[in-house]
Image 1 (cartoon, rainbow, N blue to C red):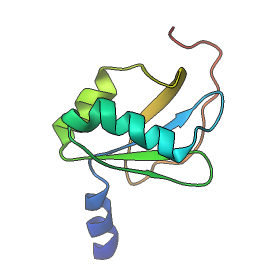
Image 2: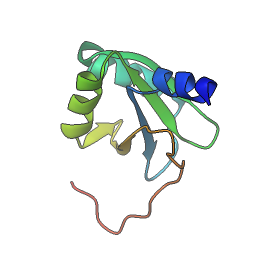
Image 3: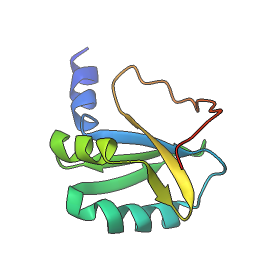
Image 4: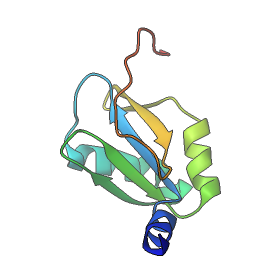
Length: 100
C-alpha cells in the first residue's frame, strides 16, 4: 500500500489527454505542449500506445491552470484533458458536441 501511495505522488500534478479524431504523433504533441505549456510549468510529456498522453507539471496550480483555460487545439485537433487520479480509467468518452 505504501508503494502505491508513493507512486501516486509522482503523478499528482499530471493531466491525461487524448484526441477525438485521431492519434497525433508523439513528437508533434510533445513539441506543441512544450511550446504552449512550458511557461506554465510543464515538465514532461509521456504517451502510451493506446493514444493517451500524460502531461506532468511542476505543481498543482500549473496543472489546474492549464486544465481550466482550455479548450486546447494541437495542430487543429482538440485535446481532451482530465486530471490524473489513482482510480483514473483510461477511456475515451464519446461526444455528440464539442466546443468550437
